[in-house]
Length: 446
Image (cartoon, rainbow, N blue to C red; front, side, top):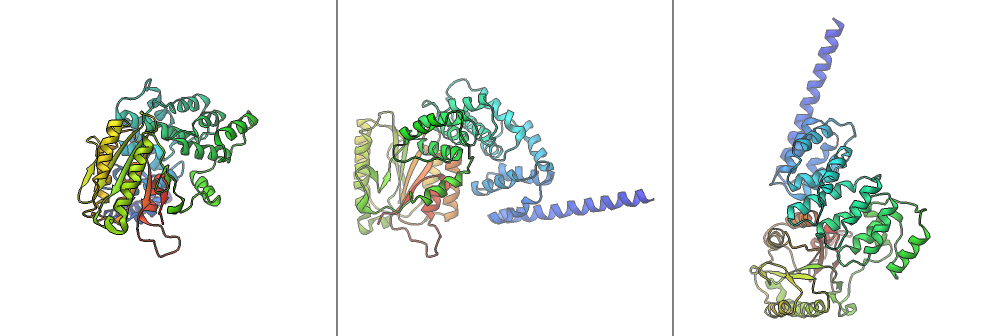
């Protein structure tokens, strides 16, 4: 009789727990339908099979934005190692090895130890430079997934280091340089140092080296890193900092400063160094750009940049897209080679810039995401605007910015021309948030 009562009690408690979970998950679903990211908070404490099923439905939904999906990945990454939901997620991946991009990105972000062999198999299957975008993205996400494990053996570290080769698509190189910053191995340090001056992945190489060693050199980086490495062969004291630690270090060193017009030199775009091997300039030409001579200044800045680009390698690629009365690309396919002919075409396009219309930020970012960036091998965007979106909310702008960075590993550098400064201390403007989300730089010329 006692056994029967105990069994009934256990069954009752199990039913009550299941009912509680159902209610919590239902509330999460309702919150997400309103776009409320805070509704995800209870997911931290609910990590059973049903919670995992909800997670998979969120990640696979085309109606849910990248911000919410990224937050879900952060929460799931902190689930207990023995959580039943983790087993459910692993079983799903086993059955869907050719899953879509959002699912693959999710699995690359949640640090499931059992997925290491899965990611390694994707990389090992690749024997040459990828020719298709989806193929490149899968390799990049697999590299990202391996970067979550500090104890990767030497063959893995060397294989990932090999993906830094200049002929590899940018998305793969960017994920590889970032992943090496999480691998506690001397080969990772040795592989990163030669790339600190790389126009496309140099800033990430510097960050990864800081994460590994806690060191940062800015006087003569190539020479200083070479000397440091020679002096520490076989005796590197690994620090294994987080990415945010490097950003905080830069702020403490006062390396991030507002830019004054008077300090601009001829080699910058509104004070920002133009770096990269694949560049996309997205320029606001809305009606408000007629104020304070802004449109004329923009023509002057772009004319100067086009002159600078002509002194660089003909392997460099760039594009210009404007948004105002409509979204208009300079080049039909968005991106063009750095040739004299294309420079003349770009110069005519810039000379004809006129201020008119609204500020369709969402439309132009969606255009870049869907029409320009796939297969374009872009590493840096320079986004200039003087206002707020006229075709959506700031949250929508941030969501597509996050999606651009996650999918293409592109830095979005932002230039604010007349954007309203937040009144609250510590509050950041929309363009500041865009840059922070994507590892780019922000400036507001005075």
